[in-house]
Length: 92
Image (cartoon, rainbow, N blue to C red; front, side):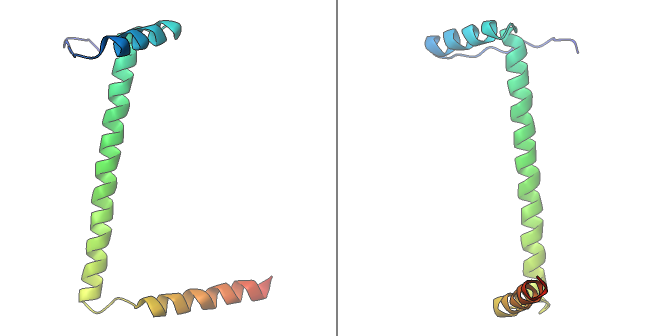
């Protein structure tokens, strides 16, 4: 991929010196390390947004289910799972 953009940033001299030393110790150009860090950041941000959207959809579906009186009470769910646990425990 051609590199056509320049990215300039300000940072503390100590941070720059440590970063450059670590990049050199890894035998990698600092620009390559920065590109990888940027790609990882982009991926994490996208995953976080996708998960937030997924979670929001699940919560909305649950609310809609409860509003339509299709939901179950906590006591019903606990009772069902207690019965399942008892059935599994009884088989062992």
